[in-house]
View 1 (cartoon, rainbow over the protein chains, first blue to last red):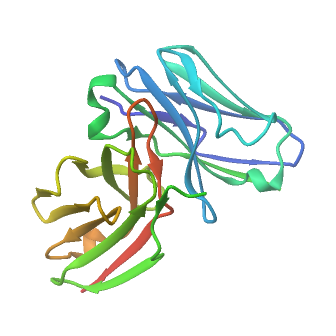
View 2: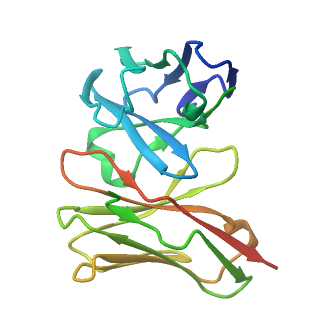
Length: 115
Length: 111
């Protein structure tokens, strides 16, 4: 089991550029979550999918953020255009519906810096 | 408005002593509570959980206590070890929703 795989690990971009973060969940997991960690807000939920369908995107900050899950093994989080306040660590996590009480498995995160 | 609150940003404890991390919540519909541990440059990892129908769950050195009337839970680590130094997140969920996390408490265990 390779765990949840996120890429890239670090991303530095200029304000106004498009940024795409990638996630490969654990095989067999039917839930996928995107979280963002900042000092001010801690770990906040952005969006989550069940069986590739977005269920709750109320945490997405604004229209500059979009997320897709074209298949069970891949998801992207896109920011266009990026702003300095988007600088944070973005985590992807996955779980199986029958094991949610045992928590989610998180990836190692993508540290995004927008300058 | 934060539904899960960890009011202590940091805690320092000596090796061998007890560490007590606290968490408060506002949503009485939460049915599961979890604690996660996070080391630098890694993702959070699941530590221990408790159902809302219980008031205590123990796993080795880690015990979680739930006080529903006070909407409060705590994580006890006994004895504390230097390897326990990390950020600890409290999380909660209700049926049909995703985990909601607190801001975290940084635990430092000195030898």
